[in-house]
Length: 218
Image (tube, rainbow, N blue to C red):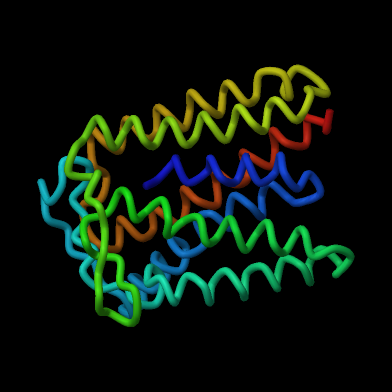
């Protein structure tokens, strides 16, 4: 899953308004940020196999440190604790929100991936394989994204024109990005896939935070 991961970020911002939407945006993709760095450094591996699934060409055959279920719990605990520290240790709610954002990644990936998500280490791999069906996978991405965004919008109000139109612009831009990736897979090499992922995750989270600064809690 790609843009669908941001649905939980928006929903958690609605539930915990004092949390940072930038932190939640990074949180829902944190294990993929780690994946990108680990692929670039050779710690994890991916093969580019055109037509591997209908949705993308990624053969994610070795990623025990980022996409394992046990590893995800570790990432969530550490990320939540770090968010709590950065928030000034005033309330555990912020840390819990970020931890849930991180944990949501594995759950959503479970529906999309082929059986390449390990439970422990590099063993007991699971995945329901929705990526094997292009348009149902695309629909799942958009439902997750728009559902979370709708919750966020219903709990906030615009401060200005950017706040008023920003959520719609985000929805269109992210939907367009997902469609582009689906129809013209940009992952030509493992390094290109990793670098593209890292740039996308930081840029999208920054865009989310920018729009959020122009909206207030209802």
